[in-house]
Image (tube, rainbow, N blue to C red; front, side):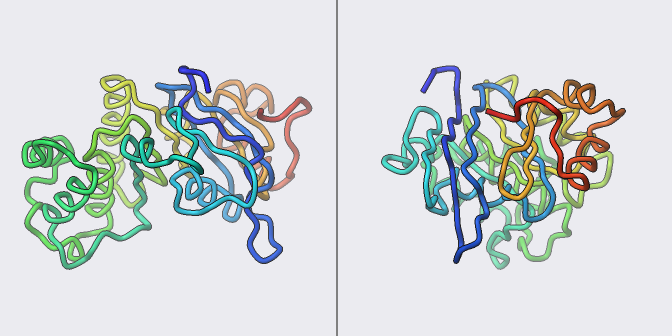
Length: 252
């Protein structure tokens, strides 16, 4: 895999009891970029991310992340990756600080105390550190999930709805933080989101999925122009409802 490529997926397929959730997809994600993974419910986004993380074995195909074959030798890559989703709960009885300590130790983070303090400052979590995670609001849990995803300063960050349940002001601040983090660390971000304005702002490239396949890809502005629409949301709705990609070769 090229040094310029953070993720390389070839013929990736996942079947469950005869149902194909991901259907032979292939794509590359450039290092230092933010790529959006878009599609309606059941499009295959979550299954794709689970296979990228090594949480689920593919039925067929191959995955390379950060130069490592994720089927043969995924642990060196996993140490440099992390994941955030507001739909995956952290242990509710542990405090925020305890949760961050657990995950920091799992990743072998050095000087973990100062790292947690820095994340608490940057993500406005200082007043929440000693509260049980299960007692937090949905928006607070989203910020804690993001802190967990950043505890090891990952080179590859996989995000599922990173601003879900956040008020507009906080969501805008989180987007700005992600932009700064990518710029400062040279990190690569793969982002699944239903917020099209968020995708337009953050993403250099977008993969459009439907029924387990990538039906089109391109920069947000290029997709908008290709479909003759005004916004990425209109492009998304066209593909979701009509099911047709633009009359040119889809993503590879």
